[in-house]
Image 1: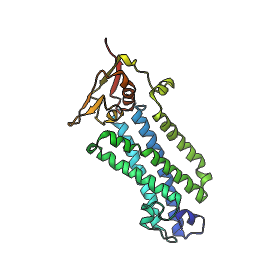
Image 2: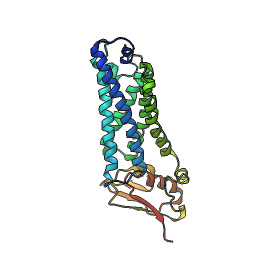
Image 3: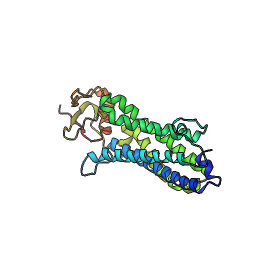
Image 4: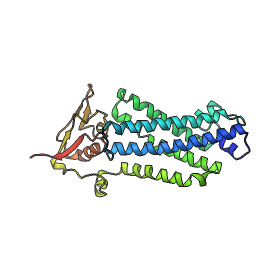
Length: 266
């Protein structure tokens, strides 16, 4: 029997307290998950930059991710302290071990988040393009966690309690995720980003003081931007016209807003 099933019976006073701790930590995890995704998209797309220091963009994302991992871990550990139900470590680590779909969604989603977080600290040892593609697994991971949270609320009979807050928190991540994958032309028409010069006059300029060599631009336009063995960024100042869309995507994705696209002097 799972924790949510225990909530529908008459648990011992000890398990009732554990259930409350599990519910609170689960809701905090849901909140931190939504905030982490929102901040990550805003920072990566360059839509947040009014801070005293540009490092605050990345630091804020890391702090929110750390809170997500902490509250999610606490949520899982509460299951181990039940008296009326036997819930082992294998139930927390192996999807479908207890045959419950909602638990499996939460386990897979949380383990993906852990993997993405760990590789974020090790990305210097791997190719930036491959790391970024793996980092983007955070999007489906958060979708799995959201599904886990809503299924858990339905099963425990708390859906009415979390419905308004859950929808309110989930809408911004969904909207921002959709905007993140839209082409630059659509974002320009919507007024979310400024247009760049025409393809035949495009010139690239990178501010070396702002650039922190994260390598996001390389993953978007590897033919134009390259990280050298010394970690310094090398780039083509006048890319070919066929690469314009990739260069625009790289400039839009740069978390430090270090890439400037200007008109070339003929």
